[in-house]
View 1: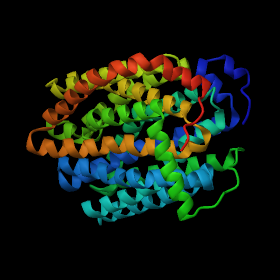
View 2: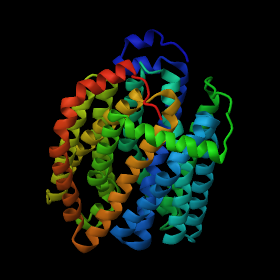
View 3: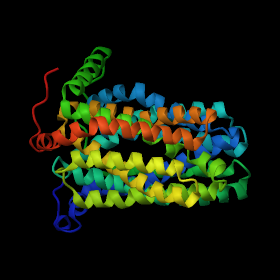
View 4: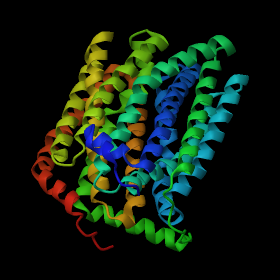
Length: 434
C-alpha cells in the first residue's frame, strides 16, 4: 500500500484517500464504470416498461437481478477470501461485459422480450454477486483502516456523482439510440455504454500494484466451514449485526421508489423520459452533495447517531415524495431522500467495514452487499405489486410510514450505543470466536 503524499493535507478525507496511488487508479476506473452502471439501470427499466407497461414488471426485473446476490453473494465472499479479491473482480467483470453486450445485440435486433431480459439480468446478477463485494473489500486493502471512512465516502461520492450525471447521459443516449436505431435502440446503446465502462474499470484493476495473496484453494468442505463461520461471526458481533439488520430493513421499506421512478414519470406525472431524467438527477444531486460532505468529513466519530438521523429524514422525505401531489413538489422531496439515504448507507458501510476482522472481511462484506441491495429489490417488487392493487403513490407511502415506525422503535437503542460502536471501530476489538 502506498503512503499518502502532500495531497493528504488538502480537501480533508478526499485528499487523504486520493494521495494513495493504487486507490487513485482504482477510483479513476470506478468513476467511469459507475456512469455505465446508472445508464444500464435506466436502460433496463425503460426497456422492461417499453415491453410490458407494468409497474409489477419494473419491480420484478429489479428483484430478479438481486435474487442471485442473496443466495450467491455469501458464497462469493467466501470464495474471494480464498482465491483473491482482485482476481475475482477481474474475472467477473468479463462476465458482466459479455452479458451486457448480448443484451445490446438482442435489443438492436428487436428480439428482446420480458422473459429473455429477466434471464439475462439474473445471470448478470450472479456475476455482480462476485464482483461487487470484491470491489468493496479492495478499498480497505488499498487505503488501510485509517483512511477507510474517507475512501468509502469518496467511493459513494463517485457513485452518486454518476447518479446525477448518469441519468442525463443515459437520457441522451436513449433519445439518440431511439432516433438512430428505432424503439429499442436506446436501451441497446445504453447496454453498450455499460460494457465500455466495465472494460475501463477492469483495465484499472490490472494496473494497480496491490496483488492478492496466494490462493489457498477452494473445496466444498472449506466453503461450508467458511460460510458457517462468517454467519456466526455476524450473529455474535453486536455492532455489525445491529447496523446491518437496521440498514436492510430501511432499504426494504424506503428505497423502492428508485426502481419505480420510470412508473412515476410515465403514469403519475406523465412526463416520460424527460421527467425520469429530472427525478433521477434530483435524487442523485441530493446524494452527491451529502456524499461529498461525508468524504471531506472523513471520520467515524458521530456516525452511529448520524445513521439514525439520516434514516429518519429518508423515511420522511420518501413519504413527502409519494404524497406531494405535484411533480416539482416530489422533485424537491426526492433531493432530501437521496441525500439522507446515501448518508445512511455511508454510515452503515463504514461502521461494518471498520469493525470487521480481516479474516472475515470478504464474507461479511459479501453478506452486507447481498442483503442490503436485495432488500431494496424485494421491497421494489412488493411495492410494485401493491401498486397494481392501489397506486404507486399509495404503495410507496405505505413503505415510508412503516420505516418511520421502525426508526421510532429501534433508533433510540442505536443512539445510546453509538459512542461504543465508534470506539470499537477505533480499537478493532478481537473477533468473536466461531
